[in-house]
Length: 89
Image (cartoon, rainbow, N blue to C red):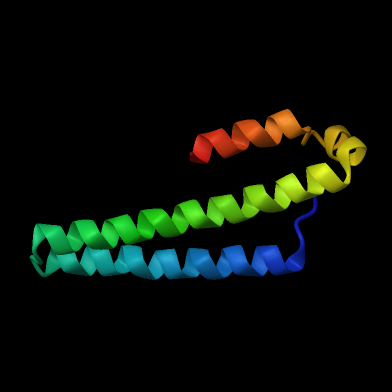
């Protein structure tokens, strides 16, 4: 399944943001920051990763619904996309 360019760009932007958040967590740990602050930042990074995954899945669902035969032939039948979704849920 070929992802639309706007979806790829959005996910890449989200991943760059997550990378910055993870680097921030590393700095916080090195600086001896409070546990609650570190956990808050980890939670934000985790949510951002989930959102990137959901963006990909939603694009796959649209593709499957609009092109069911092509999606199945590409290995992305609706039940496969549903399994991918459940991995993120």
